[in-house]
Image (tube, rainbow, N blue to C red; front, side):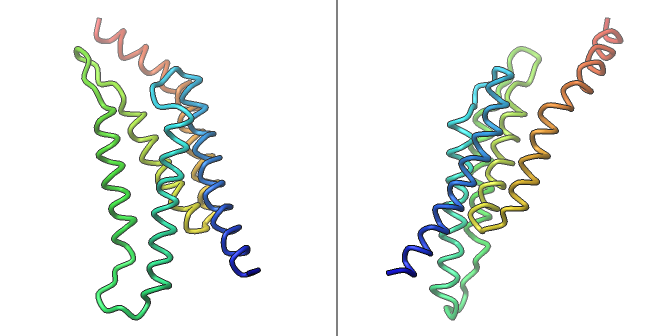
Length: 153
C-alpha cells in the first residue's frame, strides 16, 4: 500500500509541476491580451505530462516486448501540438497573428513532457527562458519594429 502512495505522489508531483509551469506561461500571455491563456497553457502542459508518463509506464511494463519504441508517444505529442498550434495561426489582412501563441503552446508541451518524465530542472529552466523570451524580447523587438515601420514609409 505504501508503494502505491509513493508512486501516486510522484505522478501527482509531475502533473502538478507541469500545470503550475503552464499556468505561469499562460499568465504572461493573459497580461499581453492573447487568446490562449492560463487554462490552455496549463492543460497543454499537463496533457503532455500525462502522455510522457504513459510512455514511461509502457517502457517499464513492456520492457522486453520486441519492437517497442518509447519515443513514439513523445513524437506524437509534438505532432499533435503542431496541429493545435496551426489552428491558432491566422492571417488577418497582411498580418500573421497567433504565431507566438502557437510556439508558446509548443514549448509548454515540451515543458509538460519534461515534467511528466521527472526532469524538473529542465522544465523549470525552459519555463524561465520562455518567460524571458516572451517578456524581455518584447522590449528589444519594439524599437526594431518602429525602425522597420519608418523604413516602409
